[in-house]
Image (cartoon, rainbow, N blue to C red; front, side, top):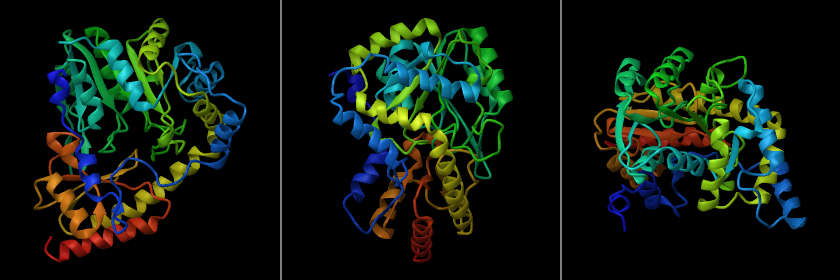
Amino acid sequence: MRSTVQNLEESKIREVANAGMGRSDVLAFWFGESDEVTPDFIREAAIASLRQGETFYAHNLGLPELREAIGAYTSKLHGPVGAGRIAVTSGGVNALMLACQALVDAGDEVVAVTPVWPNLTAQALIMGAKLRTVPLRPQGGAWQLDLQALLAAITPATRLLIVNAPNNPTGWTLTRDEQRAILEHCRRTGTWILADEVYERLYFDPTPNGCAPSFLDIAQPDDRLVIAHSFSKSFLMTGWRLGWLVMPPAMTHHMGKLIEFNTSCASVFTQRAALAAITHTDDVTPRVVAHLKACRDTLVPLLQALPGVELSPAKGGMYAFFKLDGFDDSLVLAKRLVAEAGIGLAPGNAFAPEAQGWLRWCFASRDPGRLEKGVRRLAGWLRSGG
C-alpha cells in the first residue's frame, strides 16, 4: 500500500463519534447533517423511479434533465451556467475528489485555507500534492482571513487553491471584494481555484439572491475555476450521496472520463430524487434556512452565557464553533464530554492544528429543545469542575 495512504490521519470526528455511537443517553451533534428526514416528495420520486425499473447505468455526467435543472438553478442564483458545464457526482465529497484528480499531479503545490473539513486537505495529499495552509485567525470568536497572507502564498508555482466558504467548521464567509482579489490574483499566477460552496444557501445575512457570495458571480466561463456542490445540506439529502461540479466547458468531457473510472455514474433513482428536489427548491431550502437560523439563534446566546466560552455567531453553515477556556486538547475534551456529560461534539483539531482547543456543535436539529438540553448538560459539567 502507498505510504501516503498509510500515513493519512484518521478522522478525529469519527473517533469521537465511535466512542458514543449506540449510546441512547448521548446527544449527538458531531456530524454535519440535520436530523430531519428528507422531505416526502423527494423520497417518493426515488420510489417511483425504482418502481419503474430504473435500475440501470446512466450517463457518466448525469441524467440530461438533471444537468439542465442544475444549470437552471445555478443560473437563477449566479447568472448563465449551461448544462454543458455540469457534472453530477456520487456525493459532494466525490465531486471534490474528482476535481483533485483532474487538477493535481504528484508533487504539485496546493494551498488551502484552514481550518477546514479534513477531507479537503486529505484529498490533495492522496494525490501526492505538497500542501501549504493559510490559517484563518480568531478575533473575538469570529474567524478572519488575512487576505494579503493568502495572496502571498499563491505563486506561479501554486497549481491549486482550495477554499471552502461559507466554511465548515468556522462559518467564515468570503466577501465579494476578497473573492475578486483572489480570482484576479489566481488569473495572474495561472492557479486553479477549487471552491467548495456546499453551504452557499445556508447563509443568514440578507442578500438579493438568497445565498452567500459565489465565485460564479464574478468569474468567466473559461476561468480556472471549479465549484463543488451537494444536495446534502440545503435539500436534507445527506444519505443520498449526490453532488455536482460546475467547471469550464472544455473540462466537462474529461470529467466524464474520470467519473467512469471512479463510480461510472450516479444511480438513476437518486438522480430522480435530486431532480424533484432542485425543481422544487422553494418548497425545501427557504424553510431549512429559516429553521437553521432559529437554531443558531437559540444555541449561540446560551453558549455565550457560559463562563469561559469564546464564540461568535456564524454567518453561514450549520455550526457553532467555540472555545472553552482551560481546555487545550480538543480531542480529549470531546471524548470527555461524551463520557461524562453525554454530549457529542466534533473536536476542533480535526479541522486544523490552529483550531486546537475549539469544538464544533452542529445545530441542525428538528427540535431546538435538544440544543437547550445539550447546553444544560454542558453547563452542569462545567459547574461540576469539568
